[in-house]
Amino acid sequence: MGSRGVSGACWWLDDDARQGVVLTGDLGAGKTTLTQGLGEGLGVRGPVTSPTFVISRIHPSLVGGPALVHVDAYRLGSRLELDDLDLDADLEASVTVVEWGAGLAEQLCDSRLEIALTGQAERTARLVAVGARWARLLDSLAGW
Image (cartoon, rainbow, N blue to C red; front, top):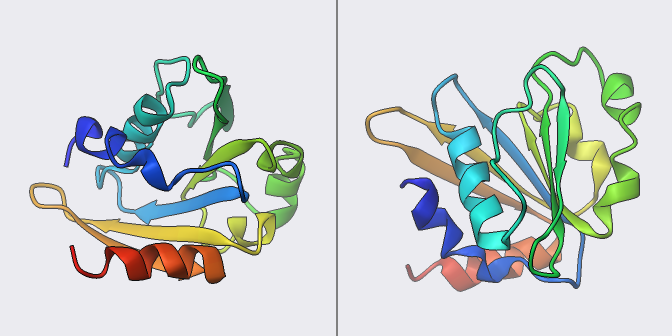
């Protein structure tokens, strides 16, 4: 699925809860592409590119919605380094996506969606809901 396929699926992002998304997958699995689609769906200022060398980028909304906080945790060595970014200050009013976040980003919020991407020619996404809100969302998608 390209970024355009994701942008149309942003109906699940609302203002009622922290929007934490943790992405994992090999290089080239599509983590940044998925985040670009989220950014497009949210109507944020772009372009959304990998923040590998700056670690974190904030993309403000152009349409009055939540901002997109895009984090690349690949070069971070510990949860303490992630905590030093003060991302919790942005969580209430944004969608926070952490690439390479497994083992580091779980501390950011109790409710989150964890997405593991595999493959390159044919991609597969495994979604894990953490918290009741995300569990309800995944249950609603079960028939797709």
